Image 1 (tube, rainbow, N blue to C red):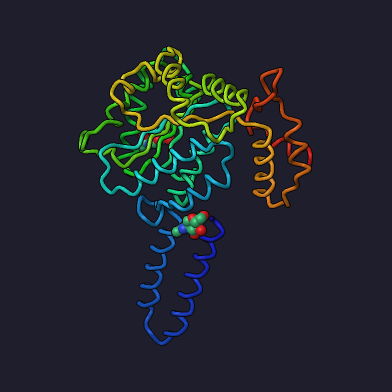
Image 2 (cartoon, rainbow, N blue to C red):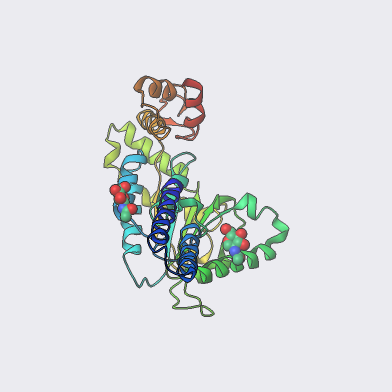
Length: 331
Ligand SMILES: *[C@@H]1O[C@H](CO)[C@@H](O)[C@H](O)[C@H]1NC(C)=O
Ligand SMILES: *[C@@H]1O[C@H](CO)[C@@H](O)[C@H](O)[C@H]1NC(C)=O
Protein backbone atom coordinates (compact mmCIF):
# COMPACT_ATOMS: atom_id res chain seq x y z
CA UNK A 1 0.00 0.00 0.00
CA UNK A 2 2.84 2.35 0.90
CA UNK A 3 4.66 1.49 -2.31
CA UNK A 4 1.57 2.26 -4.37
CA UNK A 5 1.32 5.64 -2.73
CA UNK A 6 4.94 6.49 -3.39
CA UNK A 7 4.48 5.51 -6.96
CA UNK A 8 1.52 7.84 -7.24
CA UNK A 9 3.54 10.60 -5.67
CA UNK A 10 6.33 10.10 -8.12
CA UNK A 11 3.77 10.28 -10.86
CA UNK A 12 2.50 13.61 -9.56
CA UNK A 13 6.04 14.97 -9.43
CA UNK A 14 6.80 13.85 -12.97
CA UNK A 15 3.59 15.27 -14.40
CA UNK A 16 4.25 18.56 -12.66
CA UNK A 17 7.76 18.57 -14.07
CA UNK A 18 6.42 18.03 -17.55
CA UNK A 19 3.92 20.82 -17.02
CA UNK A 20 6.51 23.31 -15.88
CA UNK A 21 8.78 22.25 -18.66
CA UNK A 22 6.10 22.66 -21.33
CA UNK A 23 5.14 26.13 -20.19
CA UNK A 24 8.67 27.34 -19.74
CA UNK A 25 8.05 30.90 -21.03
CA UNK A 26 5.38 31.57 -18.43
CA UNK A 27 6.11 33.56 -15.33
CA UNK A 28 7.13 32.04 -12.07
CA UNK A 29 3.54 32.52 -10.85
CA UNK A 30 2.61 29.36 -12.63
CA UNK A 31 5.44 27.50 -11.05
CA UNK A 32 4.47 28.79 -7.64
CA UNK A 33 0.84 27.88 -8.37
CA UNK A 34 1.80 24.42 -9.42
CA UNK A 35 4.03 24.20 -6.39
CA UNK A 36 1.18 25.06 -4.04
CA UNK A 37 -1.19 22.65 -5.72
CA UNK A 38 1.51 20.04 -5.59
CA UNK A 39 2.03 20.74 -1.91
CA UNK A 40 -1.66 20.21 -1.21
CA UNK A 41 -1.72 17.06 -3.29
CA UNK A 42 1.30 15.64 -1.54
CA UNK A 43 -0.20 16.52 1.81
CA UNK A 44 -3.40 14.71 0.90
CA UNK A 45 -1.49 11.69 -0.27
CA UNK A 46 0.57 11.47 2.85
CA UNK A 47 -1.89 12.43 5.56
CA UNK A 48 -4.79 10.21 6.26
CA UNK A 49 -7.99 12.16 6.45
CA UNK A 50 -11.52 11.27 7.41
CA UNK A 51 -12.89 11.15 3.87
CA UNK A 52 -13.72 8.75 1.08
CA UNK A 53 -10.18 8.80 -0.23
CA UNK A 54 -9.02 7.02 2.90
CA UNK A 55 -12.17 5.35 4.09
CA UNK A 56 -13.85 3.20 1.43
CA UNK A 57 -15.66 0.04 2.27
CA UNK A 58 -14.89 -2.86 -0.07
CA UNK A 59 -17.58 -5.53 0.40
CA UNK A 60 -16.02 -7.84 -2.18
CA UNK A 61 -12.67 -7.43 -0.52
CA UNK A 62 -14.10 -8.40 2.85
CA UNK A 63 -15.85 -11.41 1.38
CA UNK A 64 -12.74 -12.58 -0.46
CA UNK A 65 -10.60 -12.08 2.64
CA UNK A 66 -13.01 -13.98 4.88
CA UNK A 67 -13.19 -16.84 2.39
CA UNK A 68 -9.51 -17.08 1.65
CA UNK A 69 -7.78 -16.08 4.88
CA UNK A 70 -10.02 -17.12 7.73
CA UNK A 71 -10.25 -20.86 8.32
CA UNK A 72 -12.81 -23.03 10.04
CA UNK A 73 -15.17 -20.19 10.93
CA UNK A 74 -18.15 -20.55 8.65
CA UNK A 75 -20.58 -19.10 11.21
CA UNK A 76 -18.47 -16.09 12.18
CA UNK A 77 -17.60 -15.44 8.57
CA UNK A 78 -21.23 -15.30 7.52
CA UNK A 79 -22.35 -13.06 10.38
CA UNK A 80 -19.45 -10.64 10.01
CA UNK A 81 -19.91 -10.21 6.27
CA UNK A 82 -23.63 -9.58 6.60
CA UNK A 83 -23.35 -7.29 9.60
CA UNK A 84 -20.51 -5.13 8.32
CA UNK A 85 -21.79 -4.93 4.75
CA UNK A 86 -25.30 -4.01 5.89
CA UNK A 87 -23.97 -1.38 8.25
CA UNK A 88 -21.48 0.18 5.86
CA UNK A 89 -23.98 0.34 3.01
CA UNK A 90 -26.48 2.16 5.17
CA UNK A 91 -25.98 5.90 4.88
CA UNK A 92 -28.08 6.59 7.89
CA UNK A 93 -27.59 3.92 10.56
CA UNK A 94 -29.71 4.33 13.69
CA UNK A 95 -26.91 3.25 16.00
CA UNK A 96 -23.25 2.29 15.78
CA UNK A 97 -22.43 -1.29 14.87
CA UNK A 98 -21.57 -3.32 17.96
CA UNK A 99 -20.05 -6.77 17.52
CA UNK A 100 -19.05 -9.13 20.28
CA UNK A 101 -16.65 -11.86 19.21
CA UNK A 102 -16.30 -14.96 21.39
CA UNK A 103 -13.99 -17.92 21.37
CA UNK A 104 -10.65 -19.28 22.53
CA UNK A 105 -7.22 -17.95 21.72
CA UNK A 106 -5.99 -18.28 18.19
CA UNK A 107 -9.37 -18.85 16.59
CA UNK A 108 -9.25 -15.60 14.64
CA UNK A 109 -11.01 -12.89 16.62
CA UNK A 110 -8.19 -10.36 16.32
CA UNK A 111 -7.59 -11.43 12.78
CA UNK A 112 -11.19 -10.80 11.77
CA UNK A 113 -11.02 -7.32 13.30
CA UNK A 114 -7.99 -6.73 11.11
CA UNK A 115 -9.79 -7.97 7.99
CA UNK A 116 -12.66 -5.59 8.71
CA UNK A 117 -10.25 -2.67 9.18
CA UNK A 118 -8.35 -3.63 6.02
CA UNK A 119 -11.51 -3.37 3.96
CA UNK A 120 -12.72 -0.09 5.39
CA UNK A 121 -9.55 1.93 5.91
CA UNK A 122 -6.85 2.30 3.27
CA UNK A 123 -4.36 2.15 6.11
CA UNK A 124 -5.97 -0.88 7.70
CA UNK A 125 -5.00 -1.39 11.32
CA UNK A 126 -2.46 1.42 10.98
CA UNK A 127 -5.26 3.89 10.39
CA UNK A 128 -5.44 6.70 12.89
CA UNK A 129 -9.19 6.02 13.01
CA UNK A 130 -8.78 2.51 14.36
CA UNK A 131 -8.35 2.35 18.14
CA UNK A 132 -7.43 -0.70 20.14
CA UNK A 133 -7.92 -0.95 23.88
CA UNK A 134 -6.39 -3.81 25.79
CA UNK A 135 -7.55 -4.17 29.38
CA UNK A 136 -4.18 -5.07 30.80
CA UNK A 137 -2.43 -2.32 28.92
CA UNK A 138 -4.86 0.56 29.17
CA UNK A 139 -6.74 -0.25 32.36
CA UNK A 140 -4.38 -2.25 34.57
CA UNK A 141 -5.10 -0.86 38.05
CA UNK A 142 -8.29 -1.58 39.91
CA UNK A 143 -7.87 1.55 42.00
CA UNK A 144 -7.94 3.88 39.01
CA UNK A 145 -11.42 2.90 38.00
CA UNK A 146 -12.86 6.41 37.94
CA UNK A 147 -9.93 7.81 36.00
CA UNK A 148 -10.21 5.05 33.41
CA UNK A 149 -13.88 5.65 33.11
CA UNK A 150 -13.59 9.29 32.22
CA UNK A 151 -10.48 8.65 30.12
CA UNK A 152 -12.32 6.07 28.06
CA UNK A 153 -15.27 8.38 27.52
CA UNK A 154 -12.97 11.20 26.55
CA UNK A 155 -10.97 9.05 24.12
CA UNK A 156 -14.06 7.88 22.36
CA UNK A 157 -15.70 11.26 22.30
CA UNK A 158 -12.67 13.12 20.95
CA UNK A 159 -11.86 10.44 18.43
CA UNK A 160 -15.42 10.23 17.09
CA UNK A 161 -15.66 14.01 16.94
CA UNK A 162 -12.51 13.87 14.86
CA UNK A 163 -13.92 11.16 12.58
CA UNK A 164 -17.38 9.61 12.68
CA UNK A 165 -16.16 6.51 10.88
CA UNK A 166 -13.97 5.40 13.75
CA UNK A 167 -13.49 1.84 14.86
CA UNK A 168 -12.89 0.79 18.47
CA UNK A 169 -11.62 -2.65 19.35
CA UNK A 170 -11.72 -3.79 22.98
CA UNK A 171 -9.43 -6.75 23.41
CA UNK A 172 -9.54 -9.08 26.43
CA UNK A 173 -12.98 -7.96 27.49
CA UNK A 174 -13.06 -10.74 30.07
CA UNK A 175 -10.16 -9.10 31.87
CA UNK A 176 -11.80 -5.71 31.95
CA UNK A 177 -13.04 -4.44 35.29
CA UNK A 178 -16.74 -5.01 35.63
CA UNK A 179 -18.65 -1.83 35.02
CA UNK A 180 -15.93 -0.01 33.13
CA UNK A 181 -17.62 -0.67 29.84
CA UNK A 182 -20.81 0.78 31.27
CA UNK A 183 -19.26 4.19 30.89
CA UNK A 184 -19.41 3.95 27.12
CA UNK A 185 -22.94 2.62 27.00
CA UNK A 186 -24.52 5.89 25.82
CA UNK A 187 -22.25 5.87 22.77
CA UNK A 188 -23.57 2.51 21.66
CA UNK A 189 -27.20 3.47 21.93
CA UNK A 190 -29.79 4.83 19.52
CA UNK A 191 -29.12 8.53 20.15
CA UNK A 192 -29.11 10.91 17.25
CA UNK A 193 -26.45 12.99 18.97
CA UNK A 194 -24.82 13.30 22.36
CA UNK A 195 -23.41 16.73 23.15
CA UNK A 196 -23.49 17.45 19.46
CA UNK A 197 -21.59 14.33 18.48
CA UNK A 198 -23.12 11.47 16.51
CA UNK A 199 -21.69 8.01 17.18
CA UNK A 200 -23.92 6.26 14.68
CA UNK A 201 -21.26 5.59 12.07
CA UNK A 202 -18.72 4.14 14.46
CA UNK A 203 -17.95 0.45 14.88
CA UNK A 204 -17.31 -1.14 18.27
CA UNK A 205 -15.83 -4.62 18.48
CA UNK A 206 -15.49 -6.53 21.75
CA UNK A 207 -13.21 -9.54 21.89
CA UNK A 208 -13.36 -12.11 24.65
CA UNK A 209 -12.81 -15.70 25.65
CA UNK A 210 -16.13 -15.71 27.43
CA UNK A 211 -18.30 -18.49 26.09
CA UNK A 212 -15.24 -20.22 24.65
CA UNK A 213 -15.67 -23.36 26.74
CA UNK A 214 -19.29 -23.72 25.75
CA UNK A 215 -18.48 -23.31 22.08
CA UNK A 216 -15.79 -25.97 22.36
CA UNK A 217 -18.18 -28.37 24.06
CA UNK A 218 -20.79 -27.87 21.34
CA UNK A 219 -18.20 -28.41 18.61
CA UNK A 220 -16.89 -31.51 20.38
CA UNK A 221 -20.38 -32.96 20.76
CA UNK A 222 -20.89 -32.45 17.07
CA UNK A 223 -17.60 -34.11 16.28
CA UNK A 224 -18.37 -37.08 18.55
CA UNK A 225 -21.73 -37.53 16.89
CA UNK A 226 -19.84 -37.81 13.61
CA UNK A 227 -21.56 -34.78 12.20
CA UNK A 228 -20.05 -32.36 9.73
CA UNK A 229 -18.76 -29.26 11.46
CA UNK A 230 -20.12 -27.09 8.67
CA UNK A 231 -23.61 -28.11 9.74
CA UNK A 232 -23.10 -26.35 13.05
CA UNK A 233 -25.33 -23.32 13.10
CA UNK A 234 -25.57 -20.21 15.18
CA UNK A 235 -28.66 -21.51 16.89
CA UNK A 236 -26.68 -24.53 18.13
CA UNK A 237 -24.39 -22.14 19.96
CA UNK A 238 -26.72 -19.39 21.00
CA UNK A 239 -27.85 -21.01 24.23
CA UNK A 240 -24.29 -21.85 25.15
CA UNK A 241 -23.19 -18.31 24.42
CA UNK A 242 -25.95 -16.64 26.31
CA UNK A 243 -25.53 -18.80 29.40
CA UNK A 244 -21.79 -18.27 29.72
CA UNK A 245 -21.76 -14.73 28.51
CA UNK A 246 -24.71 -13.31 30.36
CA UNK A 247 -24.34 -15.17 33.62
CA UNK A 248 -20.61 -15.15 33.96
CA UNK A 249 -19.56 -12.57 36.53
CA UNK A 250 -16.05 -12.65 35.20
CA UNK A 251 -16.82 -11.74 31.65
CA UNK A 252 -16.39 -8.00 32.04
CA UNK A 253 -19.24 -6.42 30.22
CA UNK A 254 -21.83 -9.01 30.48
CA UNK A 255 -23.65 -8.29 33.65
CA UNK A 256 -23.77 -4.69 32.63
CA UNK A 257 -26.72 -3.13 30.96
CA UNK A 258 -25.16 -3.46 27.51
CA UNK A 259 -27.07 -6.66 27.20
CA UNK A 260 -30.23 -5.65 28.97
CA UNK A 261 -30.60 -2.88 26.49
CA UNK A 262 -29.70 -4.99 23.45
CA UNK A 263 -26.88 -2.68 22.49
CA UNK A 264 -24.78 -5.52 21.12
CA UNK A 265 -25.99 -6.18 17.59
CA UNK A 266 -24.27 -9.51 17.01
CA UNK A 267 -22.71 -12.16 19.22
CA UNK A 268 -20.25 -14.01 17.03
CA UNK A 269 -18.94 -17.45 18.02
CA UNK A 270 -15.49 -18.63 16.94
CA UNK A 271 -15.06 -22.40 16.76
CA UNK A 272 -11.98 -24.28 17.94
CA UNK A 273 -9.68 -25.23 15.05
CA UNK A 274 -8.88 -28.75 13.86
CA UNK A 275 -5.74 -30.21 12.32
CA UNK A 276 -6.86 -29.42 8.76
CA UNK A 277 -7.41 -25.75 9.65
CA UNK A 278 -3.93 -25.52 11.11
CA UNK A 279 -2.62 -26.89 7.81
CA UNK A 280 -4.60 -24.21 5.97
CA UNK A 281 -3.22 -21.51 8.25
CA UNK A 282 0.32 -22.68 7.57
CA UNK A 283 -0.27 -22.72 3.82
CA UNK A 284 -1.73 -19.21 3.93
CA UNK A 285 1.13 -17.95 6.05
CA UNK A 286 3.68 -19.25 3.55
CA UNK A 287 1.77 -17.58 0.75
CA UNK A 288 1.67 -14.33 2.68
CA UNK A 289 5.43 -14.54 3.10
CA UNK A 290 5.87 -14.89 -0.61
CA UNK A 291 7.24 -18.42 -0.49
CA UNK A 292 5.65 -21.31 -2.37
CA UNK A 293 3.13 -23.01 -0.07
CA UNK A 294 4.44 -26.48 0.71
CA UNK A 295 1.98 -29.16 1.86
CA UNK A 296 4.72 -31.16 3.56
CA UNK A 297 5.87 -28.23 5.62
CA UNK A 298 2.28 -27.35 6.47
CA UNK A 299 1.64 -30.87 7.74
CA UNK A 300 4.86 -30.84 9.70
CA UNK A 301 3.80 -27.63 11.39
CA UNK A 302 0.30 -28.96 12.08
CA UNK A 303 1.72 -32.16 13.59
CA UNK A 304 3.84 -30.11 15.91
CA UNK A 305 0.84 -28.38 17.42
CA UNK A 306 -0.79 -29.58 20.66
CA UNK A 307 -4.37 -30.83 20.46
CA UNK A 308 -7.10 -31.44 23.02
CA UNK A 309 -9.04 -33.10 24.64
CA UNK A 310 -6.26 -35.45 25.72
CA UNK A 311 -7.91 -38.62 24.42
CA UNK A 312 -9.47 -37.44 21.18
CA UNK A 313 -6.98 -34.71 20.25
CA UNK A 314 -9.38 -32.90 17.95
CA UNK A 315 -8.76 -29.20 18.48
CA UNK A 316 -5.60 -27.15 18.45
CA UNK A 317 -4.93 -25.71 21.91
CA UNK A 318 -3.70 -22.39 20.56
CA UNK A 319 -5.61 -22.42 17.30
CA UNK A 320 -3.40 -20.92 14.64
CA UNK A 321 -1.59 -18.65 17.02
CA UNK A 322 1.89 -20.17 17.03
CA UNK A 323 1.98 -21.13 13.36
CA UNK A 324 4.14 -18.21 12.37
CA UNK A 325 7.01 -19.05 14.71
CA UNK A 326 6.75 -22.76 13.95
CA UNK A 327 7.12 -21.95 10.27
CA UNK A 328 10.30 -20.05 11.01
CA UNK A 329 11.61 -23.27 12.45
CA UNK A 330 10.65 -25.55 9.56
CA UNK A 331 11.55 -23.34 6.61
C1 LIG B 1 -11.93 -4.72 -3.50
O1 LIG B 1 -11.44 -5.99 -3.23
C2 LIG B 1 -11.28 -6.80 -4.36
C3 LIG B 1 -10.91 -8.20 -3.89
O2 LIG B 1 -9.83 -8.19 -3.02
C4 LIG B 1 -10.21 -6.18 -5.26
O3 LIG B 1 -10.03 -6.98 -6.39
C5 LIG B 1 -10.65 -4.80 -5.64
O4 LIG B 1 -9.62 -4.16 -6.36
C6 LIG B 1 -10.97 -3.98 -4.40
N1 LIG B 1 -11.57 -2.73 -4.81
C7 LIG B 1 -11.07 -1.56 -4.44
C8 LIG B 1 -11.80 -0.37 -4.91
O5 LIG B 1 -10.07 -1.47 -3.77
C1 LIG C 1 -8.02 8.46 20.59
O1 LIG C 1 -7.91 7.13 21.03
C2 LIG C 1 -6.60 6.74 21.38
C3 LIG C 1 -6.64 5.29 21.68
O2 LIG C 1 -6.51 4.63 20.48
C4 LIG C 1 -6.12 7.55 22.53
O3 LIG C 1 -4.80 7.14 22.87
C5 LIG C 1 -6.12 8.97 22.12
O4 LIG C 1 -5.73 9.75 23.19
C6 LIG C 1 -7.52 9.37 21.65
N1 LIG C 1 -7.45 10.71 21.16
C7 LIG C 1 -7.88 11.71 21.86
C8 LIG C 1 -7.68 13.03 21.20
O5 LIG C 1 -8.43 11.60 22.93
